[in-house]
Image (cartoon, rainbow, N blue to C red):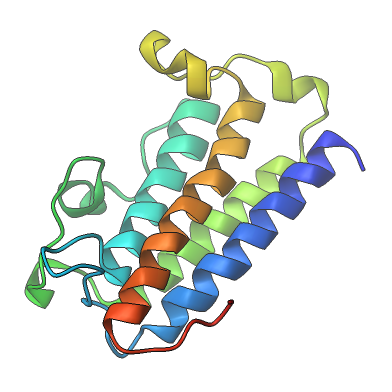
Length: 165
């Protein structure tokens, strides 16, 4: 397995885990994982969409985020609310996720292993985490896996049994 194949496998695996959990919460998308709040499944999905566009479009391709309408509610540092009127629908976000993930995988297929070592467009202060194209692709799967854990806890808060125990 080469580095491109490893990244693709990692992206596909983390997507399977996270989206399995998120899809199971479509009937309770605003369930927060703790009594004092936290990132509910709808927020997690919107955040993943916005973040992956930041990584692909911004850091890898040097272009603007393709979903600027998600900035206000889903960027790093926003606080999730249980007011559904503040958010797009789960269906809309799922479609946007499919769009950005297809673009991510399509771009990954165009790269050579040497391309993974090229510098990204991330700012200098983010260079330790996102300084190369390969680091940006790697961050996509670890970021998704991290947030899948939050959705797993939200499922428990909704009274559901674990899907993957």
